[in-house]
Length: 157
Image (cartoon, rainbow, N blue to C red; front, side):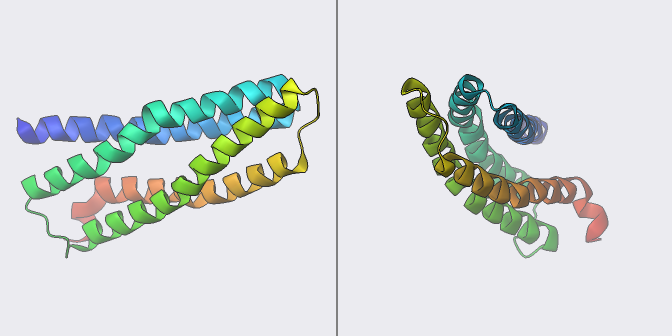
């Protein structure tokens, strides 16, 4: 029962992490493309909130439940699939941390320029490009991690 409970928490957490990440990218990109300054400011604020409320807890839950599940399976960190999963998770995390900082900066820039009635400065768009460039490896990292979680027995047996 413990294994299935951990697995359920792990899977639901992964769904939230991947789904929310994909959703926030979609809405932020669509708001930016609209050129509607108020929509950009509001969406930027909500992207930051979503990261604090949902992404941060799942980023903590994933490795905790993952380690407990690996222990339940008697998996070793020497196993190829587990090593690759951890490596991809670290790479994804290293992409996510600067993304969080950029999101906060973009939120603040968008709110300040909207309040002052000025157009979005170049810096906002520059940060947005970096944000997307860091998001791509994180996105594909999550696909890789999910693939390893599903097929680990098939790939290394």
